[in-house]
Image 1: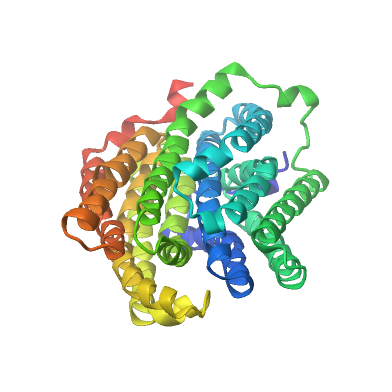
Image 2: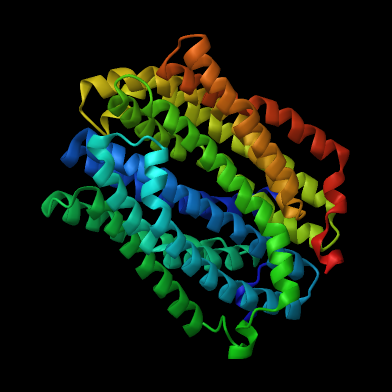
Length: 454
């Protein structure tokens, strides 16, 4: 591998390095979120509530799989980062090879599984009958493209572990542009509904993934690699799963909590309107949390290198700086959402009933933005140390122990209806902030140095 792909984040200004590394991360996340948002905007304008509901519910299941892929990819990022910090380049090479082949196998298995269980899952989620066919088509098409989504996540995970957040941004820019064009053509011109939006997404992901691999091959990334380097090495595979499985389960837990809330929303009176509001609110929310998520990922990559090099105080400072920056961004986003909720909803739909129902819901879920910067930053440090089990516990507590019961209580005990779901989403994270604060102060993350276990 050429040294131009490696960037040492254990030296220089923490603040400057973190901002420089996080900004491409943030832009990449914004563009990735744009996929599903553009899907919903175009479908909402051309297909109405049924199309919005189809993209919303089908998209939630798709996020379940995307989150699992991203969770597993985190293990690759952390191992590559820590091996780089420790100058263990041979271990880094073996990790990249094992990860590439392992992800290919997993993507095929998950594709087959989801195509088999997709319909029963939508029934379990109480998908409105009027939107069921649109939802199932959207889901099945997205699942057929799982291999490209896993492949893209693997490429980006490795590059970010090497300290490179710019190239993943370039690849996702290409995908976003293709996705927007195909959405307008397939949904707007050819009236393909939610299915057209799904085709646009998987074609965009496929082209982006193929171009990223071709680019890396032509610029010397695979220099020194042979076919044997891509065999699954048991020791590396175990380590990848040891770190990545809790992160994947964490993503699944969060997605399942929101899917449980979807089933709750779908059981309410006027379910189609509520489901459309929840879907639009979810898309707006997916943008609003991006600053915290971007700095969390940047903390994981940068602190991971520093932990690998034994620079623990620099790793802690990375988390603190990232927390402050994420909080400033999150507060700014919250102010915008609280001030202009109706304008944000009108981007997606002109349906008066959906807008009137969705505005108070959006204002309630925006409360969460005050807490996510803390939660993401604390979890970012834990992930950097390879202590993904803590991040899993914290998310499980927040999502399953607090959010879901709170939502049912506000809906049925306090008769808040749909707004009760919004309040539960808005306030659930506050408890996890205190758990994360305890974890950082306990310094348990210093004992989780993964490469010492290898």
